[in-house]
Image 1 (cartoon, rainbow, N blue to C red):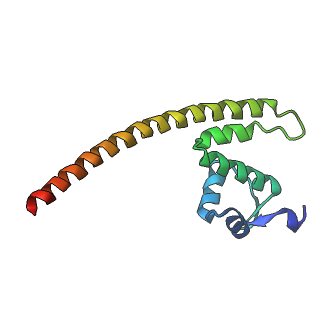
Image 2 (image 1 turned 180 degrees about the vertical axis):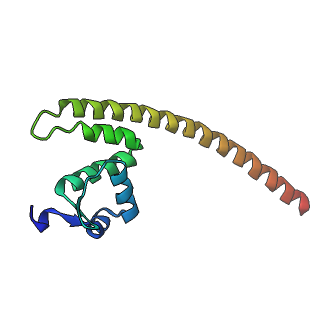
Image 3 (image 1 turned 90 degrees about the vertical axis):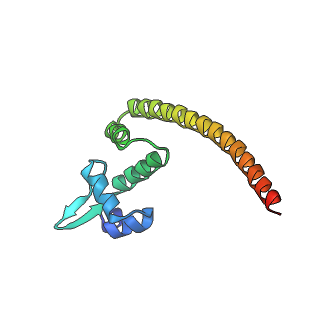
Length: 131
């Protein structure tokens, strides 16, 4: 493995816009497996690929445990059908959850707009009465 195949924690932070604490946290959760040289951590191409998937999963709202399980299913050089199926199922469930949350938000937004309109009308009435 050459130095070009690995990145320091600082380089990873800059490349992925994360903090060292985030990388150490993901390492503690067994999501990343950097090479250790003394106190230095060196992240491989595999770590970078895993971090991309972790960040994407977090952006979609997946739990770290779901992400860890999906990543653990990776079979280097073999079929990753089971991993893909599991990722697809988790993503489908998350999409249903997000759509439900959006529907709830749409209702809450509509109700808030009605309340704000009524409040604006009341405030306007106060101002007219004060004139």
